[in-house]
View (cartoon, rainbow, N blue to C red):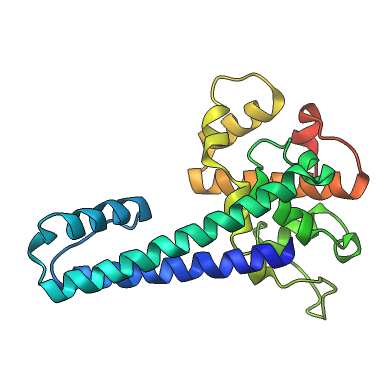
Length: 223
C-alpha cells in the first residue's frame, strides 16, 4: 500500500507540473485557463481540433504533444487507482475505515499504510499532529519514532475532509451531523474542513488500534 501511494503521488505531482507548464505556455500566447484540470483538458481538445485560438502551427503541435503526455499520465494514475480500489475491497481493515463518512478507498488505504506500525503513535492526537491536522504540536524536539515522513502523506488530510461530507450534514439530526453543522456556522469552511479531517484521522487511529467497528453515534466524542 505504501509503495502504491508513493508511486501514485509522484505521478499526480508530475501531472500537476505538466498542467502548469501547459497553462504557462498558453498564457504566454494570451490564452488563460482556470486552474482546473478538467477545464484544461476541454480547452486543449478545442485548440487541437478547433481553430486553435490563433496559435501558430508550431505551438499547436507542441500543445498536442503535451496533451498526449497528459492523457498518458491520466491513464497511469487511473491504473493505480484501480489497484488501490482492489486492495481496499480485499482488506477487512480498510473496509472498516471506509465506514467513516468521507473516507473512501484512497484515504482508507493510505491510513492503513500510515498507521501500519501502531507503536509509532501513542494516541490519535499524535497521529493527527503527524499529518499536520492540529493547530500546534508541542514536543521536546528530539527524534521521532514515526516510520514514514509526513511529506509522503501530505495529500492525505485533503482526502480526509471530503467537502461533500460537510454539505451532507445539513438538515440531519445525528450527533456527527449536528456537530458539523454547528462547526460550519461558527467557523470558516476551511477551518471546518481541517477539523473534520482531524476528527476522521483520530477515529481511524482508534479503529485500527482497538480492532473495533465504526460506531457513528460515538464518533463526535472520539479522540
